[in-house]
Length: 79
Image 1 (tube, rainbow, N blue to C red):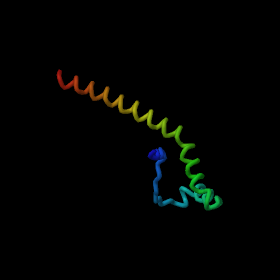
Image 2 (cartoon, one colour):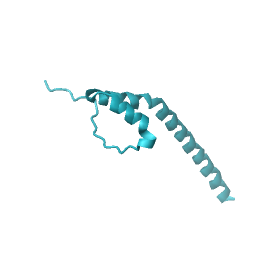
Image 3 (cartoon, rainbow, N blue to C red):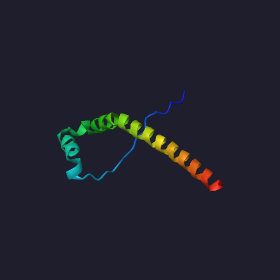
Image 4 (cartoon, rainbow, N blue to C red):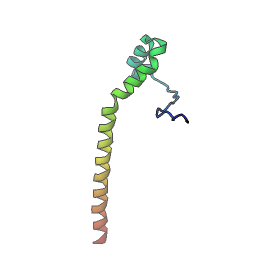
C-alpha cells in the first residue's frame, strides 16, 4: 500500500531583520533554545492569522468599493 503524502508544507525562508524595528523578535529568538526556534516562529505566525484575516477582509471591501466607483464613473461616460 503506497504511503500518503504529508499535508504539511515545508519552506525555507531567508529574512533580513532590522534591529531597530525587529529588536523584540530578535531578543526573543536569541533567548529561545536552538531546537525550539522553529516552533516559536510557527507560534508567532499563527498568532497573526486573525490580523491577516482582518486585512484580507478590508482589502476585499476596498476592492468592492473600487468596483462600485468604477461602475459609477462608467455611467458618467455614457451621458
